[in-house]
Length: 158
Image (tube, rainbow, N blue to C red; front, side, top):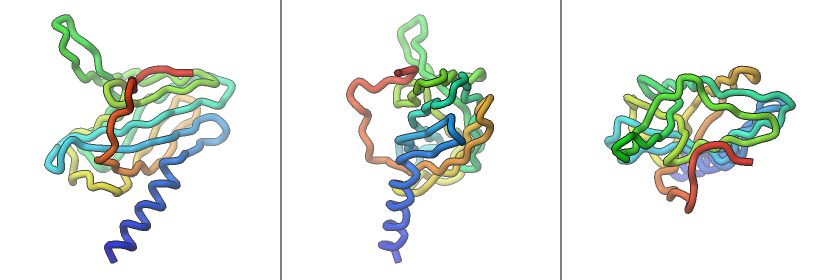
């Protein structure tokens, strides 16, 4: 029984983590979620959001039932040199023909008040809300073992 659940979760993770497409414009790739520990009350999700459309778009909100609150966040250094996480109310611009990375240490989806701990291999249902593309439903695999990529940072990339 456990093997079947693990195998099913692995197949789903590979399928969903590969990409999610909204019409012809928005594609989400390499998405994963994590929390720092099994008892953590917060978690985060990371992904690459590509805009293959002819018009700029903006990721303005994210929804999920796995936490009391879900927000778009970024890291910013304050005047004392301390990194802080901040809610980005205006969301993240996704220019036409470009990609925006939500990555550890940069822009990300923040889950606050987790209702249950994130378990390796589980799928987290989320709705990404875009100004133009509208709502995109995705499932993001929990990957508690993934290490940060060398040189990874949030922000806009070509």
